Image 1 (cartoon, one colour):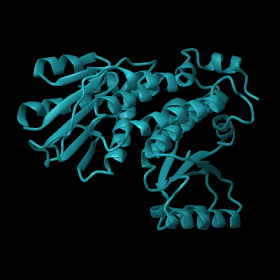
Image 2 (tube, rainbow, N blue to C red):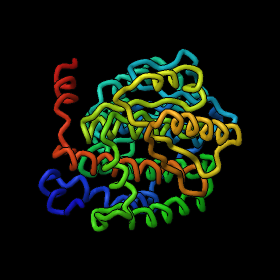
Image 3 (tube, helix red, strand yellow):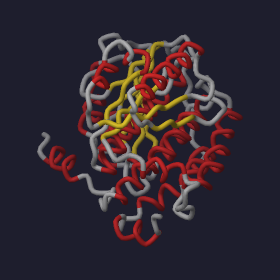
Image 4 (cartoon, rainbow, N blue to C red):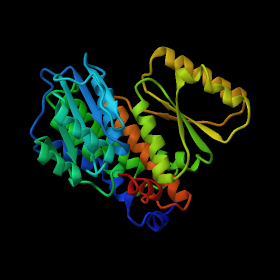
Length: 337
């Protein structure tokens, strides 16, 4: 069984401590006294961000899917051509120095759209002051990916009066995080820790299957495994995969199926899960199942991400890998103009 000394040895920057504190960090961000932004006269929301910041955009897009409003998620340099005076562009860069997201701010000079930006400072804050763009400064905790809940719950706070989610739903998600934290944190390194158990059973490249509504959690899990654990991971929509990529299991391969399932998936999705499991059993393919908590969409997505992010840290420790450095990413960033 893993010992705390192992974690401290291979995670010298103590990323795991930031994750231990996620519920507290989320609660503090949601309680902070931010000015509010509404979506009055807005019929198109663009969520711009990369990496950990992009994952926040995926979550907000999932929430906004409840509304009759057009949503675009931008992970790159270009805004959609449909942007107009009824568009709100929300730019998130936790570091404040993300090249792609900074380039989106340049559209402020040639667009009638409304812009708002959220970062821990950096070039984004400077650019916003120069261009009179509303900017919110949120502290970064350890690293952009470890700051996920701080920024997510700050955004839920800022747009509290506009998003199609009740305050009680947000508070419920915080309570669910508290409950989950007690079973996955670094004080509970035993067989009852679901994040550690999943990490121990992940000896091959994970192939993550997800249902409708959980794409944001699947993308985040893939990214966290790649950044923290330094291993390859892939994702597949379970319905679409049944029409193509399921064929890979006809031959031996180096993948381990991980099934992300909702506590109340659509009835036809449940049917698909059942058939896929039957096929895996027939082929003697070992797989892992992860179920979301019960509750609203925020509770489900945030708790899945919390569990799976911690899994990626435990997987790193098991591989004697420091989860914090991202040298390959820095190599690319340092050479960008």
